Length: 112
Image (cartoon, rainbow, N blue to C red; front, side, top):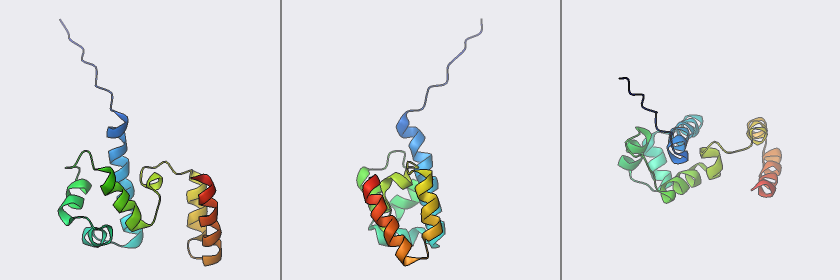
């Protein structure tokens, strides 16, 4: 007799954690930040961030995610991969131009 076990479907939350961690890493890399630098800027314990980034924390608190997004000065949506792709492309194009960057910031208020 062969027993077939179905793989349990991942919950939406379980699917978001790897994406969150990946996007935190991307944001850190873009800024050339270490875990210690993010810890200082997000006002979070170094060990908490270290555990989160090594997948030892499976359910980060909303406060933790908010503090991380705030440190990066980005919406939580970006960390969760929910940002419209076109908006991210525009952001990359205008990142170094202050006038266009201000315009993009104004546009974001209409989207969120």
